[in-house]
Length: 480
Image (cartoon, rainbow, N blue to C red; front, side):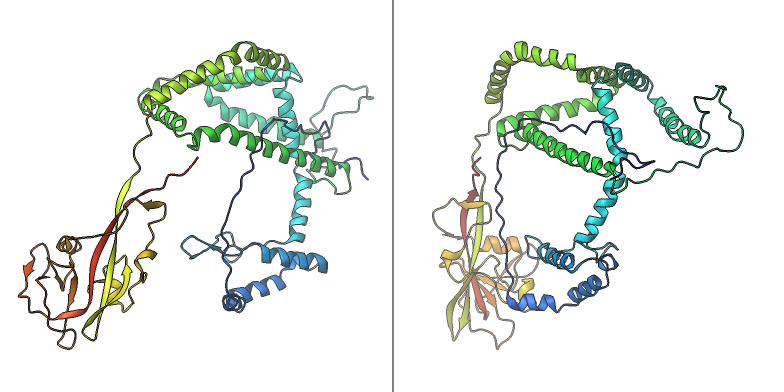
């Protein structure tokens, strides 16, 4: 095995450190309802044109031409496990814009993923080199380097227009100058002439950044640092969630509401006072506060100070803040209540009205579904009517709406007759002599706009009638 790869950026120093933060892992259980398609649906999907197109695309995929049979079988198995189409809550198929149908990229393949990982790991060394050097700067490994960083940051904070100058100077010093010195190397130390000549032809070939060889130790050093970086990211992610989530996810509504109120007031004040803040000096103060905290002696002093002076007062401050929340924020308002409706539909058959179903729509002559020739939708029994999602019944039973004329006028329903007394049915009016029979309706509503006219009571009725039932619902209380 080779010791290292020439002209490759690899972190050959100590490994990237792993964060060790004690976090109590809270297991989260997620329940998801899976819908299994019928055999006919699965057969139709297999014979669809898109499925056949995917099979042909996989068969002609050049990335899997040189792989073994075991890798191909495993790739096909993973393609069956990973869903190609996402079904939304409304039952409609959502198109995945990242799919290979819409962009020219290969689908998931284990051999291709292995190849890309090897290529990625051979070239990621420059990131770890930068990470290691940055950690050295922040840990004060070489104090002169860290003080130089603070000096540069101070100039940038006091004069932000120097930032483009810093970028251009970094390109000149760290890109062009090393590349020139690689082609024009200085004389060997054994030579008597200590001068460095800039004249003459180049003495060495140009330097090129090469990926680490897969059989070298540099390749495994990159894998080591990549492993530690993944652990650092996972630990940092869990720590951030554990720190921020209790204050922002309204698990404690009083605490989250108070923080929201404070941030809202600060946001409103920022519209007026933002131009008065000395952002340059604030950035300078942040830089000279955060970077010195990386020094080991300062860290020990900060931990000792928090343990001896701040921690005894944390409970006092927390209790004071809780008293403020209890006194100023009240969340004991009653749950929201609404009125829901259902329409009882009856159909005329052989001069007798027969119960049909309970529908959320009145299914009047002007209903779009009725005009389109669709049947009324609903349930056959009153007990099967359920409250809306996220709501629960507040009233004990359904109540008949005695103001049939009111909801007819609100919906501007036409070609119907309304019973002012009795069972409050709203009956369709027959459009032709072959539809319906002689009516016995008390009042007939017809016409357009707000000017309603009363009928003569001798109009012919249609084959549908309905009446409105109402009931109160309230929001469900979700336990925390």
